[in-house]
View 1 (cartoon, helix red, strand yellow):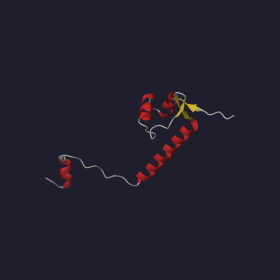
View 2 (view 1 turned 90 degrees about the horizontal axis):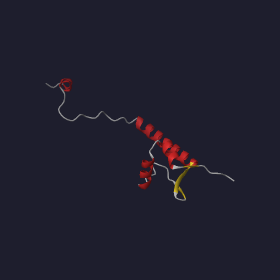
View 3 (view 1 turned 120 degrees about the horizontal axis):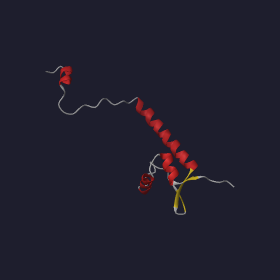
View 4 (view 1 turned 30 degrees about the vertical axis):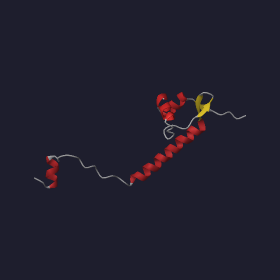
Length: 95
């Protein structure tokens, strides 16, 4: 017989570094990009260890892809709003 290992919500909160209340909030809004989907065991919520590990690995892979895609596309520095400083005016050749 194969025994399956499950995380309860306290263990999941430690693994993800989130509070129990924030996990409940994500589940209430069905935001499964923020927490993995649970399994109901009676009245309790549980998460299979393998599915949580797979979810974390998937999130890490998505972050790697985003980081690789954003390396070559650096945004130009944002223009400041309002009146330029005297040094900026002098550098532009103004008064």
